[in-house]
Structures are given as C-alpha cells and as structure tokens.
Length: 257
Ligand code: DGL
Image (cartoon, rainbow, N blue to C red; front, side, top):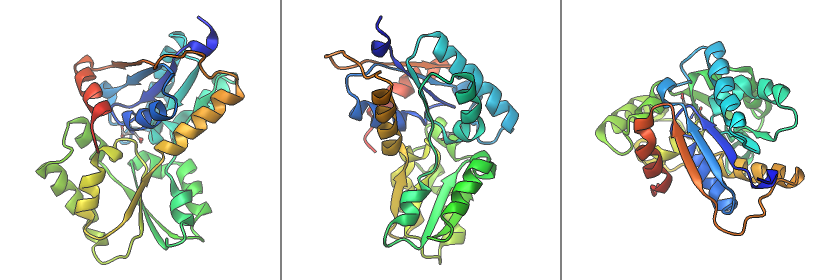
C-alpha cells in the first residue's frame, strides 16, 4: 500500500481520545484511522510518570508495527509524559499530541479567569506548569486536578446522578468566583460537557483542544506529503485492551454531545 494511504494511528488511555478522533474524521473524512484505547490500564492520570511513559511507548510501538503513517496521542496525560520521548524515538514520523487549550481561553477578549480541568498527572507535569505560567499575565489561570473524572466516563456515567454528584462537589469551591472559561484538559471530559455546564451553575464558555489537534494533524500530513489519495470515505477501526469496550467505542463515536 502507498505510504500516504496507510491509516493514521490514534491512541488514548481509553475512550477519551474518541472526542479528538471525531474532530479529525470531520476534517479529514477520506483518511483511515486505527484507534487504540488502553482501557485495561485507565486511568493514566493517576499513575506514576514512569508507568504512563512505559504504557504510552508500548501502545505507540504497536501502532507503528501495524504500519500507521502518523500517530495522534489523543491524551493530554500521555502527551505531557511521553511526547518528547516518542518524537526522539521516531524522528521521521508525524506525531501529534494534545495539550490543554489554555492559550485561546486566556487570550479571549472577555476572559479574566480560566479554570483548567485536567488529570492530576497532567497538572503536576512540567509541560503544563510552563503552559499555565506563560499565560498567567493574561488571565487568572486556575488549575483543577479532577481525580476520578476520567474513570467515571470510562464507566459510562455521562449524564446521571453519579456524575452530577461528583461535579457538584468538584465545583463547590468556585461557587462565588467569576469564571469566564473552562478548559477541558483531558480528552475524556468533552463527553460530559453538558453535565459540566449544568453543574457549574453560572454561564461559562467551555473549550477543548480537539479542533486544534485536528488542524495540526492536517498541517503535518500536508507538510509530509502524506494526505491520502483515496477518493472514498475513510474507515475507522477500533481496538481496545479491554475488548468488551469496543461497542462503547462505537457508541461514543456516534454520540451527540
Ligand atoms: N484522556 C486522558 C487525557 O486526555 C487521560 C485520562 C486518564 O486516563 O486519566 O488526559
């Protein structure tokens, strides 16, 4: 098969990266995608840096062995832990990561406080700390580690009382703060965007990094001469380290949220 017609590899700790995959298939509808979710080891955001590095390298090695032409690390946690290692290991392969969309939120004209929701590991890592520091003069950037939230999404608590209760407790300290933007800094969180909006209890803009990642993927494929020449719609193949999650993958891929 011509190199440009090989699939694009996608990786997340589990289901979350499907929110990014949707943005990518919308922008690049003729590309084939091979999505691997490591639900057997989710959540990554509460593991050690070393463990996340090793799981990420293993997953990406396996996608590359299957012949993908590029890799999207559709996981903020894995990106902050391992993107540099991956790019050092595979210097000639386009490898696209995702990071919390702090920049557009902090630079929005009406923005003075930005609440960044992400996993504990993402927030603790240097990459995020530098990002938040770079925009702290443009807005009050508040970092909110959301222990347990990605796991609830993995378990299927999207729009139910369990999710409401979790979010009510999480947002309690912000009841009397004025916040203009919430940044979804974990790819699992867009699936609970409505629940986040409802439970936050004050009008707020909510943004995530999916569209930016899709545009970056397109730019990198173009630059490498790797855009597909196929005319027909592309295919999406799901794999998961917990095969019983495959139906859930397809369901989330088609879910309205
Ligand atoms: N979806 C991932 C992220 O974007 C991580 C969730 C997890 O496994 O903790 O950070």
